[in-house]
Length: 475
Image 1 (cartoon, rainbow, N blue to C red):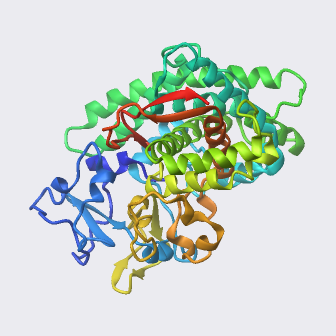
Image 2: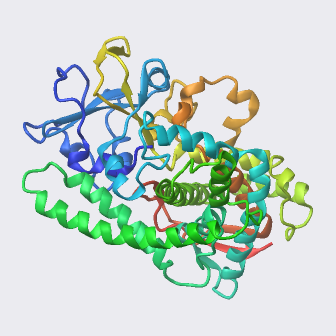
Image 3: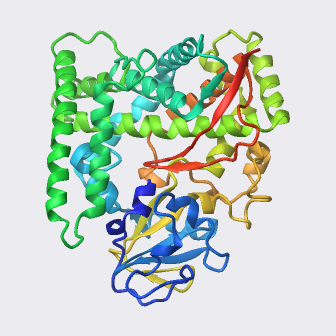
C-alpha cells in the first residue's frame, strides 16, 4: 500500500537518481525543486488526479534530486503486477514505520523469513471458518454503535463513528479486547500511543536525509520510543496472560498465533513479531474499512434510487429491520456488495501500491526501469481509466454485476494490492463492510445533513471523507 504520506513528504520521493528524463511529467517543472508545485502537500493523491491528460498514464514525479514514476492506467498496471518482472518495494515512509510496526506483514520485506512464516501461519485466520467466528464480533460491535447513537440526536459524524466501529471490531478480532470506543469521547490510551507512534514514524521518514535534519530526527526517534514502550508493554502483558493459562478456545488472531506456536512445538513467531502483527492488523484493519463504509454511505445518501434498491434487497433477505444478518446471509447481499466495490473503485482507501523491477526492463514499450527504481500504481487514477470504465467519474454499482466484471481486464481494479503481498485481510474487510452496511441500511433511512455538502477528502495513511454528516431516522 502507498499512503498519502508517501506522496506528500519530500524525502519519501527517493526514486532513482540516474534515469534520463525519458518520462512525461507535470507542467511547471522548475529547476532544483522540480514538480513540487504540481501537488497539494495536504492532498497529493487527489491533486494528482487533476494533472493534465497528457501527463498520464505514466509520469515521472521529481522533487529536488529525487524522482519516481506514477502509473495511471490498467494496461500499465498489468505490467507492474507481473510477478516475474516486478516485486513489492517499501517506500521510505512505510519503511520508517518499521520503528513501530517492525516486521509485521505490511512493513516486512518479502525476503525476510519472518514475513513468509507469519503469512503462512496467519492464512487460516482469514479462512471461511475464521470468518464465521469473527461474524458475531462484528454484529456485536455494530449493535453497540447503534446504542451509542441513541439519545444523541439525528445527525451523525460519519467518518469518526465508522472509525469507532471498525477499531472496536478489529481490536476484538485481533486480541479479544474491548477498547471502550463507544463509552469514551477520546480513544483508549493504547490507541493514542499507537497512532502517535505511527505519525512520528511518518514524520521521521519525511525528514530523514534532509540537510540539517539529524537533530529533529533524533528527537522524533526518542518520542517514538516512548510510544512504542507503552504499546509493547500492554501487548506483552496480554501475550503473557494468554500464555499463562490453558487454551480456552479463543478465536482471535492472537490465539491463532499462539496456537500455531504450540502446534509446531516451537516459537514459530516470537513475542516481538506477534506484537508487530497485532499493531499491523489494528492499523490496517480499521482505517481502510472505516473509509470504505464512509464513502459508501455518502454515495447512497445522495442517490435515493440506489438507496431504495439497497433497502429492498436487505429487506427481502432479512425480513425484519431489527434482525442481525446471519453469516450465510452476507453473501446474498449482492447489490450491497456492489456498492462497496464501487466505493472502493472511486476512492480506494489504500490509494496505491509500489513495485520495483527485479531485473532491467522496459515499461509501456519505451520506458526503462532498473532494480532500485520504483513506481507507484495510483489506484484512483487506474480505477478511472476511460479505456476500461464508462463514465468513470459516476457512481454506478452495476459495474460490478458478474457479467460486467467478466468483460474487464483483470488488473483494472486492485483495491487490495496485488500478488502474494496483497492484503491478507481482504476477506475480513469485505465481509465486515457488507455486513455493516447492510445492517445500517436495514435499520435507518438517511440523507445528507447538509444538502450542499461536496465530498472532501482527507489524506493520512488512507483516504477518508472529511466533514461528512448524515441525518438518520429509524425505518
